[in-house]
Amino acid sequence: MKIILIAVMAFFWILLIYYSILTISGVLQRLKRKEDITLSSYPSVAVLIPAHNEGVVIKQTLDAMIRLKYPGTLDVYVLDDASTDNTSEIIQKFSSTFSRIHYLKVPPGSPKGKSRVLNYGLSVTKSDYFIVFDADNQPAEDSVIELVHAAELTPDAGGAVGYVKTINADRNILTRMISIEFQVFQLLMQSGRWKMFKTGSLAGTNMLLRRSVLQEAGGYDLYALAEDAELTVRLTALGWKLPVVHHSKTWEQEPEKISIFVRQRTRWLTGNIYLLEKSFHEWSYWKGKTFVHSFQHVLTYLLFVLMLLFSNTWFILSLFGVNLPDFDSPLLLFWFMSYVVYTAQVVSAMVLEKTITPFNVLIGLIMYFTYAQIFLLLLLRSGLSYIWSRLTKQTIKWDKTERFKDDAA
Image 1 (tube, helix red, strand yellow):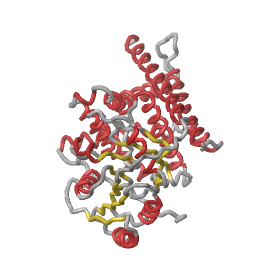
Image 2: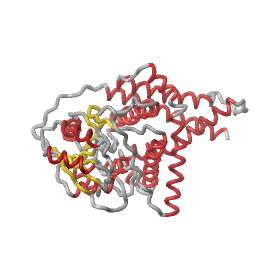
Image 3: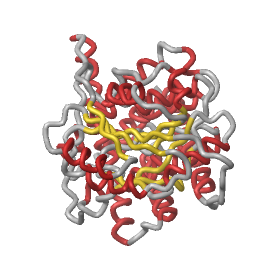
Image 4: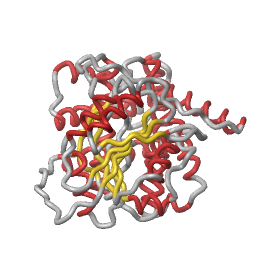
């Protein structure tokens, strides 16, 4: 037992050191100044926006698309996937007024989901690059330019990935925590991996790809609920880089109710469990830089969970005065160091994003006890759902995240 605990403790410290180094690397990468770049010629870009019953948000999204600045050819295609509200009417009104906006009706098919819709959009459009935005996104005017610059100037780049921010961060405690999570794991950790390993992860939105690269990869996996993570691993296995561009920003809605949050994250986690299983069958997913992504998945969805359960259990047993094995390095330090590293990441991200306020710091200090622990319950829920789908040989239904009307619009 003692040997097992020593091995667990050693791995735990290695994990903490890794995430600490990743955080420092992310900070250094984020401190790099934005460069003034002008290309001699700009490739054509098609913006693809999957849309299903997006009437409450699509007007604001298309307003943002009109404001996009790009020196080359830029066309926006809204892919209407069986909407039953006024989504199509709003899109067609824009398309009749602005030559950049195009309405495309997606034919019925299965399985349902974002991957099938994007594959259809790619089959009926033409461009050198394409960029995906979700139907609630409001990108900055220079977001496309920044992604194209990175893709064109980075050797072996298959595209580029930008930063996703929370437009309704101040709505309640939940949206504020989601916003902080994105600042840490979707940007700080992303930037750290790019600086250390020159590998980035697609974010599902505000992501640019060369059309030829996706064709080489065989398109989107129709059964991947986390299509961005799955595609990231395949493209990296083919030798393509995905530079992280923190200057390219888009804002999107996040769930304002816990029930919607649970359904959204269950879909995300289920998709990542699918990718985890897939990685155990594909040796190419463990070669070269692809190892970083596959190992990250094992860390996040397997080993990290075990470490978190272990540290929580040890902490609770210590509180109840249970007689635990005596070590020169107290095992209670497991829990304490987990909290320190997690909170340091949160505060670092706030400083970089200039969102550090007394209230945000307070939220950051309690996130480990609340928000981070929810991850365990959601992963258990997702794991059971995935196992049941495998046993019953049923395709897990795509669960679209509910949108909210923007009161400021």
